[in-house]
Image (cartoon, rainbow, N blue to C red; front, side):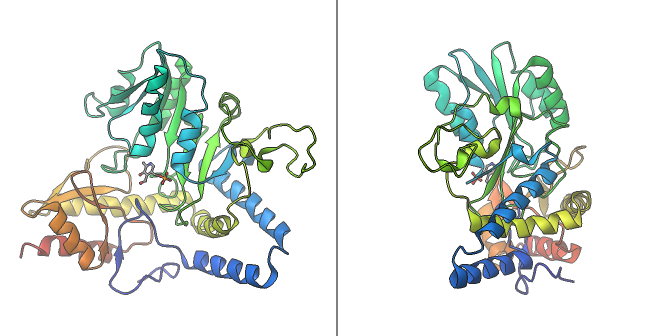
Length: 375
Ligand SMILES: Cc1ncc(COP(=O)(O)O)c(C=O)c1O
């Protein structure tokens, strides 16, 4: 049976939450309502909008288990926040940054761009040691200033032990930066347990929001180490000091928000977050992992398909990657898309990324379509 919040058209099987998710019904309603209000009243209810802005910070604080809503900045996207960190820290020639060779370009390009300042970006092969974390640690030395990693790898779905990495970094005074876009909204997250310094994610994947609004968490000590690169009225401590008076930088993460907030995005994403928070992230995570487990087991048992994601890793994610034994990936991808299975071509195969509301019957149908192509 269809989840009432996801009235997707019949026959569409949506398994692409690691790319761009559909909006829940309540998000669509919030956007329509905001549009109508703007049309009829302009910004007459701006104070309510500011309340919504405060509410979304609290919602994001809850999702991240951040100590304070002041640690939350609203940004354009993950890439912007990663660039804030890369170009905000005071690097010295000879410093190095440790990461993996599986990162999405957003968690690679900003660090590589620091080469001109003599900063080295080291990319671990996560399969070169007994655990992916050990592979990262092997590249760390006395000149490592920061470790940056995707909490879950976008293509393979490999999920990192963030608690272990965070503890390792803490003991060595290495900054810890997490690209959390493939985790937030799919699995539980805890910046405090991970001793995270910087965490960023966008709203349009597992969080069910629109594109164009992301979250950037900073812990206060790490935040103070970032030189700012964007300036404007909204990052002043006294936000409404418009009269050319002396001013101070906002003590909280608001300092990364130079101008007017994305109010439309805030209304939309806040509605989406309310669904996740009402459902409860422990429940959402259990349902996501039940679905990805189901896929992994079914693919392993299917003679026509080859599972590319790890089957028995202790830390599981919502991303499942596979290919067909005889059919080219692109042909299979087109076949699935044509038959209403929304998925992605990634990591040398097909990527399915189900969310908590997908039914097991949908997964069966998607796999039957993937298998039937040879018949
Ligand atoms: C791991 C990872 N990081 C970053 C991004 C890009 O995020 P954004 O568009 O918010 O900058 C993606 C998008 O697929 C991703 O999978």
